[in-house]
Length: 282
Image 1 (cartoon, helix red, strand yellow):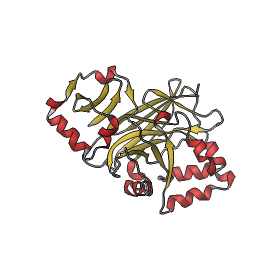
Image 2 (cartoon, rainbow, N blue to C red):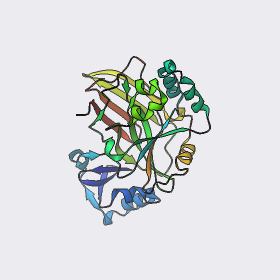
Image 3 (tube, rainbow, N blue to C red):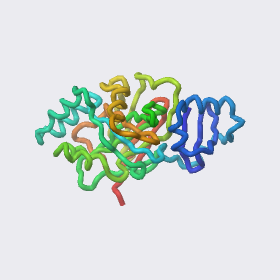
Image 4 (tube, helix red, strand yellow):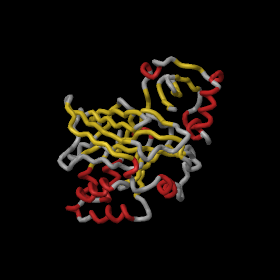
């Protein structure tokens, strides 16, 4: 089942049926046993308002985030490790990425506040002071305040490779700025953990031409969700839950950079497609 945060309110969608939920987003997604709660609504729909099948076409879909922070995990795939090492070899810091790939402690960093997050069909920004920018397609977890995975969404972790490659201490500037992240189109809620066979794909279009596309299975990820969550919740509380981007296994070749007007489409099985257009901050 899928939860959409929209201009028409919260829409619960399941099996070609939609229901309008009159609830607070933060409280809803952070409640314990969310799947069971939503399943009860579907099996006993008298307590909620049924919505038209076209409501999601008519409404503006918002990013599935309330007041939560977004964090991100880095170097969780071999391709990410190799790309980070390539971009930072001239600065002499390539070895740091090899070490963190094999280390017990994962790389975790703060990514975005809700106000810096774009929804599907909105713009994401690239920095004017960067000449090498890429999207990073990532399965993103929603974890409640108790440290339990409640749902999944698609994340686009925008990254300035030249800034990070110049010096690893510049990571916050390469990663954190206005519209540096996108989430959506929904929060996928499932009774069972997401399958390791899940496919993640990305397509980048430029003037009606596909300039990059690739896919990867989730099982190529070196880290598991449990260890990432364990380290994220050490010494930190998230009273309304937290979103965690789990890293990317797809990185375009070194001669590729995003252009203004590029359309980035990231798809993950069972969740949907997140679509964003690349722009500069106005």
